[in-house]
Length: 87
Image (cartoon, rainbow, N blue to C red; front, side, top):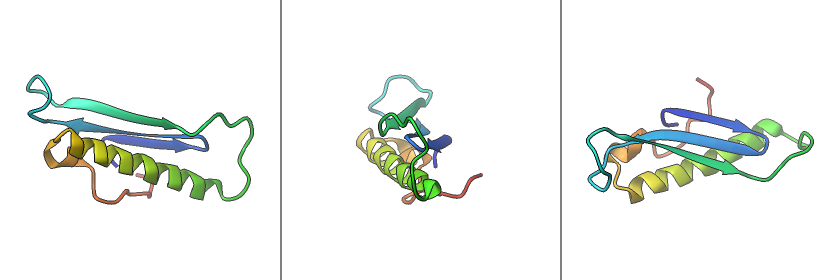
């Protein structure tokens, strides 16, 4: 899931390194995609882990699309499918 990723009941983030001819400099840019799904004042009902997995999947998909759009070498190290198992 990139260099670093995390989820909570109301947000998720993915970071990845992007080396691309579209970006200035020789060093890879470190990109952070942070998606906030709205303020949660209390713990959501139901399966919170499934909700967090869904948020991680959406954020990973968006990050992969951004890496491809930016022309990142090796898709910024992002796999085609997210890994939802904690490292």
